[in-house]
Length: 332
Image (cartoon, rainbow, N blue to C red; front, side, top):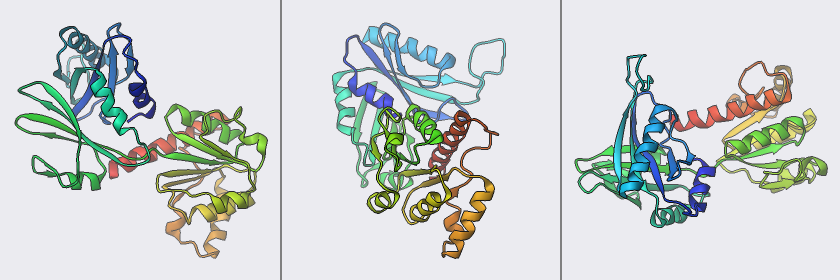
């Protein structure tokens, strides 16, 4: 779930009637496969997106009807259009979207879930006969239509389960990743700015106080300008941590990579040339680090887009992080 959108759901002040659209099921090739949501206000204003295009336009129309009638609905959208002269998606899949008036009761459910430091699992269900939409937390011992919830939790995947009388969306939300940026120079600053726009929180470390200032990193959730040794000794990187090493010198890089490889960080990136990483990795091998250890390090970091400028390098790094996070979820 998009963190910023989630916060907007919680902050919504009900100044005008609104409807919530939730993708409950998708098959084949569709615009988004992360079960997105979108809030549609009576004025036509929208918050969030479920994929854009003609589908979203039609979903907005359904939402406005839902507000007019104060009713829920489950609507199907087909992207298997083969006629270029007609409207309709060409992706090749299908999507089912549940639409409901957004109420204080629905908002209170999100408020009860708003704890981003732990896993969250719940069901959103559309009941065919009553057209009611319900939500409730689930426990591992439950089963849904013969599907083990414990297995779903272990797989860390959201999944649609269809029964005779209802369609259920099992949602699994993992703790939000935090990007730890070691080095507040040009690249670190640019990466920090882009990370904010994809809802990734950042922490910034640099032994130069001016390089971790609030003015330089306005979106950082924490800043440290202690000596390198101090934050190595006092910082804990959890299993959902992303670590980017972008310091001003290879001595700092080596010390940081040596330390980060001993943590549970899920992603490690190093701003470097191929030659620099080759030399650093040779040194780490001599210290006893295995090839498997070194393969955890993305170096040179970022997607190969032939980046030259600092903003381009930042785009390649953020692109690599997005690719990692999305493919990791797919593999899980």
